[in-house]
Image (cartoon, rainbow, N blue to C red; front, side, top):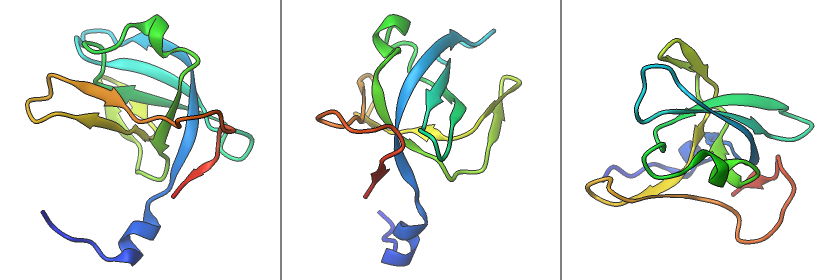
Length: 112
């Protein structure tokens, strides 16, 4: 495992987001297209997430999650993903669990 210094850690910006919409991605068995609300400052963004085999759409809408918001956008399957959700994943990726606040907190709140 490579170590990073504290200055590198400070470059990462993670926020609490609420999933407001979940859609399938055409020709993608593992991907969902998520619309997330990051609050007044950052607004809404689109994320692509390879969690389709682990979560049903109806279990995701309204859920608060943790999102990295300062990654460069990346196009997958013709859709621009504007961030990355965080999840815990076991070694063989047979289990994925979304990271989320343990209690209610406003969308857009910083994660430190």
